[in-house]
Image 1 (cartoon, rainbow, N blue to C red):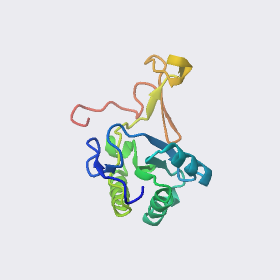
Image 2: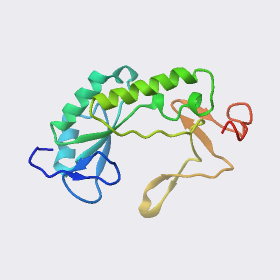
Image 3: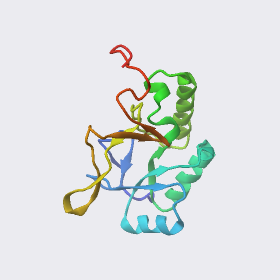
Image 4: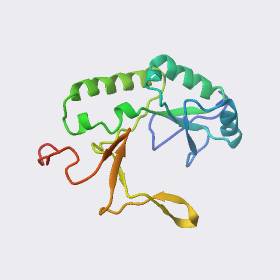
Length: 176
């Protein structure tokens, strides 16, 4: 985004500003997006990006700053970086061993985002994956996830969860 564009506050994400009012269009891409990908996003007029980083060694402040500059040079602002190591964390959600270390890792991630100028993140509290029952064809022929509780399976970060007691025991209301 160039400096001469107006700055319109975004109501849905306080602290973020857009060059146009109304609904914002964003792309979801990887940190390894090619120069051609970025050029295409720029040509489409996309102003926002959520960037996934698969290589855990790249989750550091210097790399985040590199991404902000690389995307920013094309007029694309990063509103979120996805880090699967601190998203849907069973240790945090279910108070499992390693919880405190995961909380510290998450806090470091948030600090690095802020220092890189990225002031938004989402956190999901699924301690046993994202559940589905395979794929189905949706409206207009689109491919969609299907959910039928009778044959649903949870998947997250290489782990598969199934059955009624995905972590081997029931959790009390106080624990949940």
